[in-house]
Length: 446
Image (cartoon, rainbow, N blue to C red; front, top):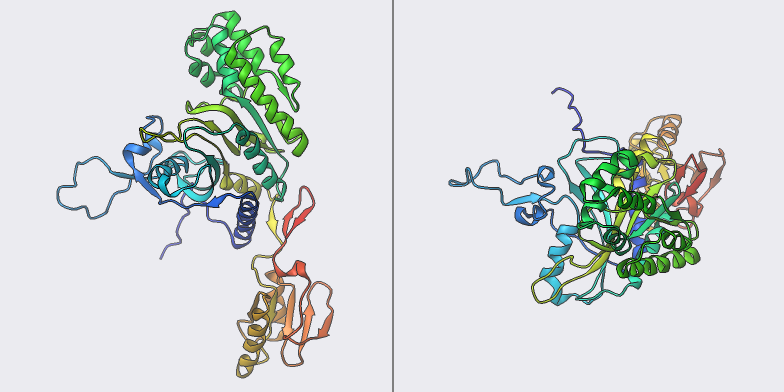
């Protein structure tokens, strides 16, 4: 059989990288659950009419077809597709299960998603997302827009990642400003401003003109987009532009509240950036985009915002606020850069040596005793010379080797070997799981 070629856009991590990924996911779960968020998992497929309801991503959806279709299936339009994000299935889930949920409903969801786009650095066809949302029935209190990004920043702070900075804006602020300077359709201006980082102000200016703005109005929008501040001082700079509007005032007040809370609980980690637009129309309040220090060219690795119409059944609506972390996007870049690794490629703490195959039972008994006390242990695959068994452990980063014949255990890092009893010997706490290393920041996490 010929050696298979990897499929572009479908990442498969090495064992050590998978250990890092699991550490990231476990940390996210721990932090989210500390704040009362419940875990949720939805099916991988959704009806195509739901996936395509916005009409903007039809070329990205993977359609589900059966190899052996039933008679009469040929030529019919596809019925199911793989979900391309976790928002569409979450909206459907809330509508279906609303009678069984207690609102406001706090949920986190970590799952694979699929998009049929061209693979490139940080973009995959199959990738892992970690979403967190707070949804209520009919009305959602504003303070959730303050609290949720701080939960996400707390999770990032607990991870061995480069510094994450969350940039925030408010759609009420932006839309009120755009209307006040002459925009009939603020969504067109939002989409143009959303392209600033990619194409620059020179190319954005004609897009603003196409949106119906005068030269003065377009300049005012670019002036607004240039405002950035790690504290609430941005509000004075907005007012200095001389534009007034009730919706603008509401957005300013809300964004000041977000910045004031962040200054107290996560200083320097959250920045008001008034060019953050989030081009999707369903955002209605605070919007968030997060950038990784040293990897800003990757773009946002965590984004989201407030939405007032996640779903509606005609009788009730379900507004919410949510953020999605691109887990594969972050890890793929850091693995490629050699900026994140595990201290060993296996979870094993102890390798039990085998004197000879006739005494393998004794080695198995030692391993069972250690495992029974929560110590990850495996038995050597063969009764080779001890030097070879030790090298086998060392190559995989296993820190300890146990020799049943004389009941001793050896620390491969120091060479120290001491008598031990599997009923009560315990390695240092730090050895019970692999360390997660960040060479660039010289940090170690367990």
